Image (cartoon, rainbow over all chains, first blue to last red):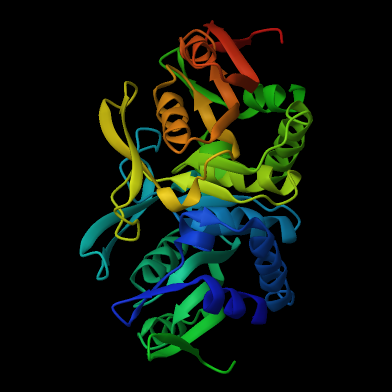
Length: 192
Length: 192
């Protein structure tokens, strides 16, 4: 998606020559105009598919998931919990996810009430790296006997193994920007 | 807002006779159709005011804030962090917030880059109870020498002191539903 790639080049910050930071338009401050365009683009990419519900994970997936849902006729969005919360019931689907980036393990949880057998679920998240969180969400969808129809990602770190892990689970991946590698402190995208 | 009150009566769950749970349409599963209508209503209520940016706090404020922003010509949304995050810079405005409901203290943080002197900020959150989180957000806005123009709340617990605390700080509060009290396991709204 050209608009997003241009934005990454213009506004993304690269630290240590290999970490892309997008706090100024995606995961701390959200550029809602851009989010709207990304919502349209996800709808285009999954226009051939019936989607009943969107699943994401706190925190940074929530804003984009809410806006994507508007482009799918305002279907409901469920966000998996990964931080302790008093408001979640005890009757949940759970999956333990280890983040290698942050070296933290979270128990990811979704109330059983909000994923039903046979529902077609589109999973939305901001980043795809090793795929650990994605595997957790796919597993939770399958625990509910629902169908993980696809995974919509804003930025994929193409040099990590996430895509293969997810595709090996039989789930389609659509990423709006795929980073191939970094060169001289700049992002080089995969040409797709 | 009648639509929201009807939804609370229809879908809200009350536990212990005094705790309203809205996980099925606000803070775990999000009813995006309803969120859209709430976005319009916030726009109506603050239509007399120039708003530059929306500030909210993770987790449950993010979805509604993103959708509210669409009704304000897609202005940016910043979400304050309250959980540890590797991606936030160290140059932040901070305020320690104690949640009485959960008996947890969080350091609420916003990167200094994302709140500028003179900006008009609309603060959005899902619940207003004692006002502890709201006070933290207002304080952070004022640290940045920006203007906390108003506070848009989905559900206010009118029997707690939050509104007075915020109004005493000179900030206008608009809540879409105000709970006056509970009676026989049912919500009784304030008539406004």
